Amino acid sequence: MKHKVLQTPHQVFLYDIEQMADVNITRSDRFRMDLGEFIGVDDLGPMMHKNSARKKIAPEIQAKKINICDAAHDDVREVLMKNGVDASRWIRTYFLESNDVHCSSCEFLREALAKWEIDPC
Image (tube, rainbow, N blue to C red; front, side, top):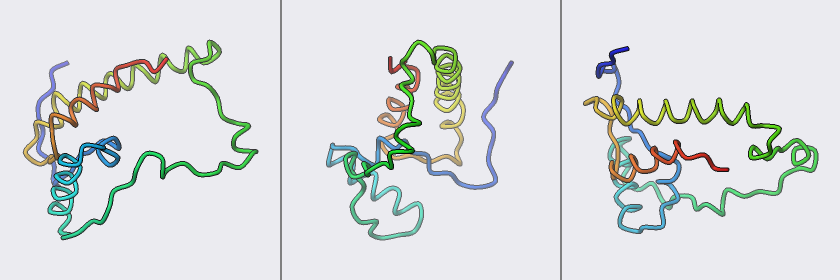
């Protein structure tokens, strides 16, 4: 199937959650400036940090968690990995090439998206 870059009716600022918790100060500052400029805000304030997202999880929710690396979940992980690989490649090959899609530290974003192709197990 042949794909082509399509123009969107709206501008899009694409980022990976990894960029919000980036420990590289220069890149993190650039991200905040670029995102702020895109949405028209002068100061976004500090971005979240990876450990700030951790909250106490209720026991009834904790009991429902699974380990996706368990053999019992191989079929689900296979589907998730295929979707991750396909999405990663499409976003990097086509979506990011649109003039209507903006990003900050685009090479870092491409590297983060490429990680979607790595099985966490």
